[in-house]
Amino acid sequence: MRNSDCIVLPSYREGMPTVLAEAGAMHKPIITTDVAGCREMVEQEVNGYLVPAKSAEALANAMLKMLHLSAGERAAMGKNARYKIETASDNQSIAHFF
Picture (tube, rainbow, N blue to C red):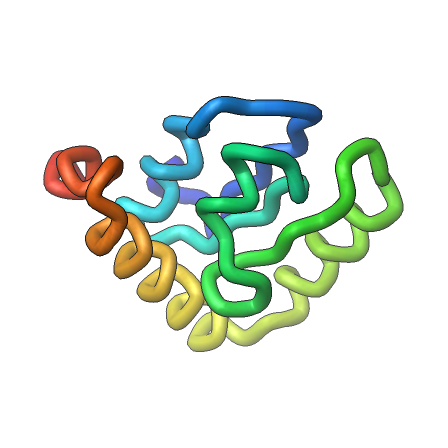
């Protein structure tokens, strides 16, 4: 995860996905599906992208969109992802491990 530019979690249904909390804690932008649990971790185009569940095309498009961002734009999304984790009381303890 440390060497990744972005974390991608296509899911049909989750609780609160730990991998997305870890991604945010590590300043990584997120691409995930717009399902319960995942959608609470992402603010569209602020710290990542949400795509419809079961849409490989939408997932691929979001990944291409992330790929075409500059390193600075991805870094800003990662910073926003970290901020979201730090300010979410349920995940605050996770952020302090990284």
